[in-house]
Amino acid sequence: MNKLEKLLDSGKRPLYMCHMIAGYPTKKVSEDIAKALVKAGADILEIQIPFSDPMADGPSIAVASREALEAGATFKDSLALVKRAARSAAPVVIMSYLNPIARYGIAKFAKAAAAAGASGLIIPDAPFDSPEGTDLIAEARKNGLCMIPVISPGVPVERLRKLSKDARGFVYCTTRQGITGANSRFISDLKEYMLLARSEFAIPLGLGFGIKTRADAKQAAEYADIIIAGSVFVDAIKKAQKSPASAVKKVLLSLRP
Image (cartoon, rainbow, N blue to C red; front, top):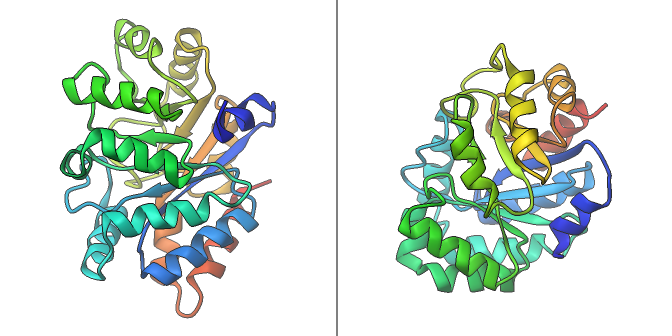
């Protein structure tokens, strides 16, 4: 088992996965943010490699990704941040999109991610049964990485069953269809949706999209093993006048009980 799987197997619940963007607002500050999140209690660190067309992300993360690229963030820099962040106690999961990975090379990427100390991959625009998704799964498995599926409400049970065959680590369940950070409204039948996911997957469930308050986190913890927050940290960084690292630390402490 890698670091993520050992944490999931420990029985600690709920876990908090905190999302950040490599190179945002700058390369140096993003490293400070990673350290601050872990210090404040992030159990899992999700590091996004900035991309110019992040289709699953709402305005906050999309704009921040663009600003990171404009500030000079590169794919290589992102992997370097992963390597430094992975030295902490918290396992690191890389979030990215297929386009930059394909340009880098799928096999080369998986090998580099593992060498940097990452434990898992979240690639929302690479369906598991697509040619690229199949290649990613194979390379992830070869390099000891967890390939984490993303599912949304309304996904047919047959689809969940197919995904369960190759899913490893945990399942990223979204609280609604759509993009990240748009609002904090969860679907009305959240319980039924999560129970269905629980019945089809033998691995832990994470729940994200729109978790911005302690009340949101408390509701998510009723159904999920992992509470996932992202846009709330990006928004805090954008508003921070002096210390973005202190701002994200404050936000995480406000989410935790």
